[in-house]
Amino acid sequence: MGQLLRLHFENKDHSFRILNKEPVTRETTEIDLLLDGAEYKIIKSGQSWQPKDPAGEIPAGLIPALVNAIILRFRI
Picture 1 (tube, helix red, strand yellow):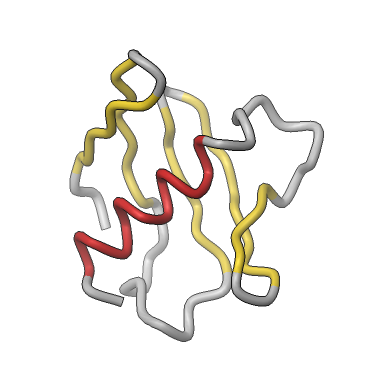
Picture 2 (picture 1 turned 90 degrees about the vertical axis):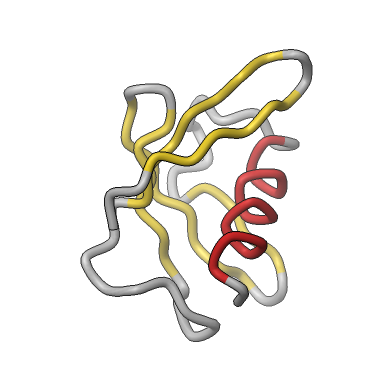
């Protein structure tokens, strides 16, 4: 999608970009992100989102904040 989004989390600014080719909708179950220069994939598991690679470097509290920013931006 390409639009640069910003998030302030735990006194640190993060910039991220959604890399999905198709639009993010309510039916989306995977989101590819470019977060602070590194690529990550998050997946929907029930009502929550989690990293596809649990050994990833994304702090656990940052994922809900990222998803909340995406939900607010795209009204899903």
